[in-house]
Length: 305
Image (cartoon, rainbow, N blue to C red; front, side, top):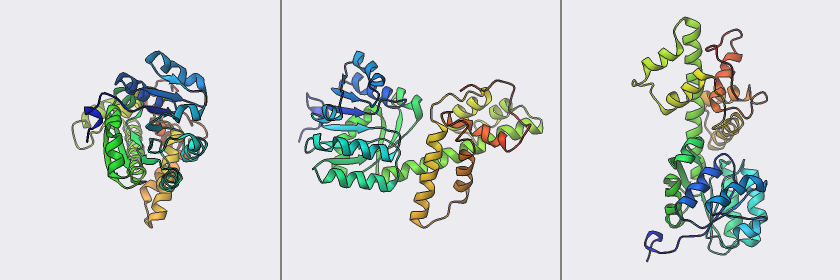
């Protein structure tokens, strides 16, 4: 049987959700030569893709009716369910939906059940790497679904980053929650280290330089540590997204019958600044730690949002 790489034709993609992540991801698929139809609730956000060769759809039905693979990357699970439900009559039988949003595990299972009734496959494939990874096509992609469906969509996902099948439907969302647990906790600890260095008389920037290369080294320390030093909280990822993910982590833990005490504290940290800084970068965890320590602050730079 021919694989897609052996064929002269590429699968037609419908890309639903052209936001901070969706725009660079769709651009990379267009650069790779995939025919792509883009749809966004606010059409103006999708229109820049026309210059790269995308067809901009005015309706969901128009976007998905000819698509072999439908990629969704939307704000949350309820939005994904609403969009899938609205598009359901227009999907062609045998198509595969790849949801790259971050949702609850239960929502991924519900979407799978909806699609199975109309003969459409489903992969939940949330991502990690932020807008930098989306633009560079280096996203970590955690996929849940059947092996057969995964093999069908793997060439497309490989254009966007590094896809790994981690289990059955909804396992991708579990893996993403594990990722976000580590991200949220680590960013909170980095913020505490920055403030401790400043308050105890060490240069936070020099401290960061000194510990890099040791066991504390990480991509988060490299990228978000510098953002904290610069007080540059322009998103990337956003506080509202991290807070949502922390909530979903706690729901998953409850459903699995386990207790995650550190994650519970981290959830409180992100919620403490959610109302004030919902759209700030995740590195604004520093602001939450500073809020707990009135009069203490890392550096002299102005906050940038």
